[in-house]
Amino acid sequence: MRTTKFDLWGINFATACSNDSQKSIIKIARELTRDPDKESRVSEQLCKWCYYHGRRLLTGQAFTSYKCISCSQDHSHPNTGVPSLCMTCAAAYKLCKQCCAAMNGRERKKIGNEIKLPSTRKKVKKKFSASS
Ligand SMILES: [Zn+2]
Ligand SMILES: [Zn+2]
Image (cartoon, rainbow, N blue to C red; front, side):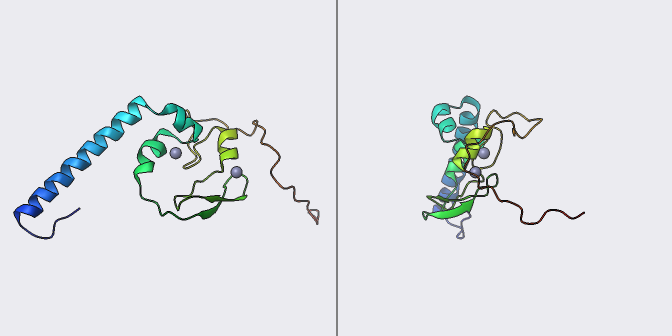
C-alpha cells in the first residue's frame, strides 16, 4: 500500500506495511519448504502453492458455478476463487484442483488417462457418422 501524505503517520504506516509484507513472504516460503499442513492440503486436493499462497488471496464470498476442465460438468464453489477441476477429477488424476498442477510437484509423461474415473460422464452418441 502506498501512503499519499508525507507525514510521520504515513512513514510509520508504510514501514509497518513493508515489514508485514516481508514477514508474510518469509512465512509462506517456510510453509512451502516444510509443508506443515500436508494432510489437510492433500485432502483438499491442493498443491503447495495454491494451499499456502492461494488461500491468502481475497475471494468473494458467493456461491459461484464453474465447469470442470476435465469432465466438463457444472459444479458450484463456495466462493469466487473457482477451481479448474472438480474434486473427483482432481483426486482421480492426482492434480491440484485449483491450478491443475501435479500433486507430487513432478512433471509427467502422461496426463493419467490410465486412471479410471467413476462414470459420471454422460455418453453422447454421435447422430451422424463421419462421411469422409
Ligand atoms: Zn471433473
Ligand atoms: Zn495448485
